[in-house]
Image (cartoon, rainbow, N blue to C red; front, top):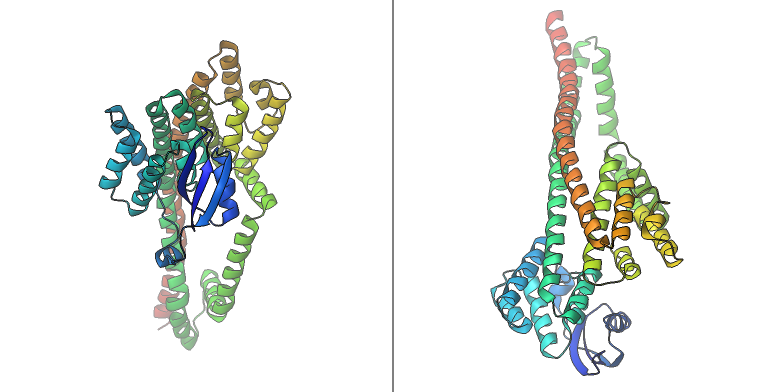
Length: 402
């Protein structure tokens, strides 16, 4: 829903603009969070129903499109264009319709006198709080291009890690899906026909064949019940995933898993270190930087640990001392933060830690992928081979009886 507003900015100017939000209350809260001192008017932009938005939802912008936007905006600003001119240029050349609409809105807000970080904050699904905070800090110091470079680097690294994880997960998933499809195909279509032949000739069936036939009969006689059970379990998992306690329990289980838990810890440590480094580099105070990260961090156990860390930080403890009490933070992270605090180069130390753990995550994922694929292929081969041998041995038994 689009709202038009008139607000009094922190620069003591009256500005006009638009904001996309689910309700007037949320829109007003977003404006105050963006730094406006007072919202003078807030009205719906119109009553026309946007059927495209009803059926397709709000414009979605992928991470790669956001990276391209940030990188291109940096280049245009460094080439001497003003922010407004750069946005107008990006609006013309953008091929992403959703991003093009957002850029047009940003340009209109900038032209109306709204600071860039406030214009960005009107699109929280695209520009998160960390993005807006870094822009705000660099906008005040006149180093907007430096802030954009920092954000572009972080987004690029996030895309790299995600693509590695996806590649590592897709191939095993395909193998498992194909294996399940083969087993179901043989169970539902092939085995029932062969069973009739076996029963007609009264052949003595091996144990493995009898097990397969029993499984086939169970599946064919309870297809509707199995389908309903799968749907109920899926709905139950979806409902429970919205519960804080359930998500925390799942995240704790994942973190404590052998092998994979270590990768999750390293991945979260790299993301935390990179985000803290960028926020501190932009001039944001440490407690505020932690607050920003808390709103975007995914793992619930990591979030709980970071909440406790911030409490101890406010009480006067150092960051390294506060983190040392939480088990999810690796000792190397705590030690490097201690070195950074002692030398006054905390930002640099965090960047070094982020580089180190990103490299470890990449190497471990590649190693796990190399080990997991042959293991899955072997397991699938054993299952399919067992089914084939059971059926073939029974057929040979029939032929021999003739």
